[in-house]
Length: 404
Image 1 (spheres, helix red, strand yellow):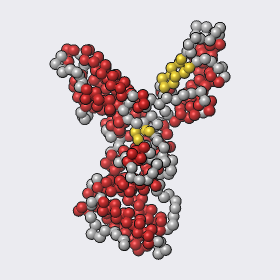
Image 2 (image 1 turned 30 degrees about the vertical axis):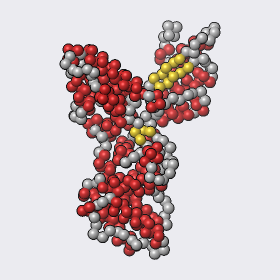
Image 3 (image 1 turned 90 degrees about the vertical axis):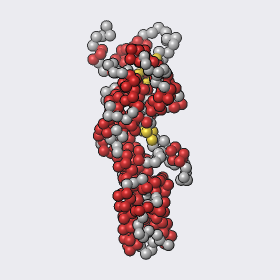
Image 4 (image 1 turned 135 degrees about the vertical axis):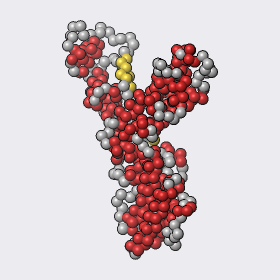
């Protein structure tokens, strides 16, 4: 730097050559211990192109100059970063480590919280002298660890808020633990991070639509179920969530079987990585344009479920095979549509029953005479079974649409 004061203004490639490559090539003998460079938060560098350039230059260090150096790179698994690591040049020389539950983050977060609260207590002894030890109780620590879902930023946000200057720590902790308008202020840093990640996709409405159905489902489901319910093209969910892999977990979309097995469903379904992300989404004061009213999407899911059944009956009668719901979707509706229906408001249940009765009459008059009675009755009875299982009560239609 002293010999070339203009170096900070040069390109990254020139800087890397001068500060790393030339320095290593000038050594008379290789270092006894492999030097390690740590790059934390690659995803926070300005611009996707800059982030990908950093990775490209690092691969050049190994492939072109064969330098004896090690890089440790920490980043959220954003789509463009994963694509860079998937490139053959980088893929062959890298090892990926996912910081998931196998590293037991809960134990580290619990230790971090206990030491952090102990520091807050020691700093505020004049305010905490009457507070019973241990503070906070073990149960509170356990609750906060559970809410963190492996996120240190959640724990750090808690400690920052509780230990804020000019505030009583016990009162600050109460705000964290109880639902109140003040609670949103406690998570401003975390909320900013979530908003920043969600804002990567240019269509907020599409994100809210998909996340809304995701939260309304009774258990995690593959992407094709969400796409069928929303009536969007295949692949839309993965496209919209392309930049959200740090928030949303994608397992294999192929379900193992189609029996009623909640464990199998959960293993094959999309889910949120962190409980705190759902807390953010359902709090309008925190999430703003990304706010999700779960009851609204539960109602939409129910209406869409019955619409899929009736439209599929019509398509079958016309021998249409395009845009047929997936087997995963039928499995979910078979076991979960009735509970969804029973949880709807009375007004919506009445509308659904009226629509079913109207469909029964119209379709019975218009159905193709060539349609197999077995096929017709199977589809028709599917609606009837769902209605009966839902225990409609006072919304029960005068004439159930049974076909025998």
